[in-house]
Length: 319
Image (tube, rainbow, N blue to C red; front, top):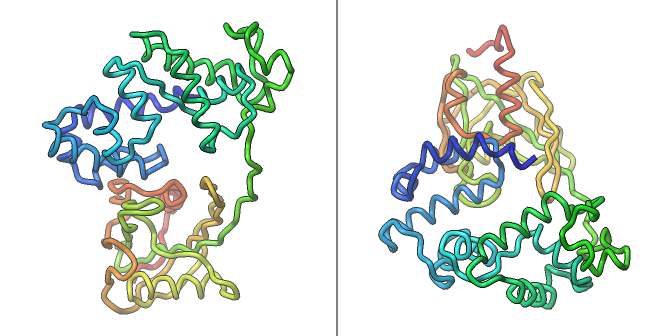
C-alpha cells in the first residue's frame, strides 16, 4: 500500500529538487504536482514552509526543535522525524504506527491522543532511544507498526518484541491503543455546474485556506433543506460568481468520502445566460477549453467529472 506514493514522490522531487525551486513555484504548479495524493493542506503548508526557509534560513532547514516548530505544517512528530533522521539528534518521532507499538508493548490504557497519554508515550519513546541511533530506531518503530504490529490481526509471531509485549501476554493487543468512539460521518448533497459558453467551460478556484484550498473546481455548493439540486445550483452560482445560468441535463453523480464527511456530487451541464463572473466566494475564475482542464489541479471528485466529459462524443449545445 505504501509503495503507491513512490511515483508521486519521484515526480515531485524531479519538479522541486530543492527549497529554492519549491519556494519559487506558484501554488498552482505545486497543487498540480500534488494532485491525486490528497491532504492538500500539506501541500499548501509545504509551499509556505519553503518560502520561509528561503527567506529566513538561507535555504537550509533549521536543526533546532524551536525553529522547526515555528514553520508552517511542522508539529511534534514531523519535528522529531526531521531532527532524528536528518540531523542525528536523539529525539523521538511518534507517529500513529509508533503510538500503536508502544501502547501494546507497555499495555498503555490511557488515551494516547490526550495529554496524559501523549506525555507517557513521549517518556517511553525517549527512554528507549539508543544514543546516536535515534533516526534508525524511530524508523524501525514506524516500520514495525506499519508491517507487523498492524491495527487488525497483528503478526505477533513475527514481532521481535513478542516475548516482551504486555498486551500480547494479556491477549488484548487488538484492544490497544484505546480509541474514542467514532461519530457517524455526515452526508451532503453537492451540486456542480459544467457551465458552457461558446465552447468554453467556466471553472473556479477555491479560496487558498480551508478544505481543498487553492484547487480548481466546477462551481457549485451544498444543497440546503427543501431545495432541488437545480435550485441549489442556480443559487450557488449566483452567490459564488454573480452570474445567471440555465441548468441542463445531469452529467454525472459521484460518491466521495473525506475524513469527516461524505458527499454525493451531482454535476450538471449548464449554459451561461448573463452577467460577468466575479470573485464573490472564490479566489479566481477562468473560461477554459475542455482539453485545457488537465492543466489545472482539481479535487478527485471533479476529476471523475472531467473523465466523464472526455468520453462524450457530442458535448451539449454550447451556444
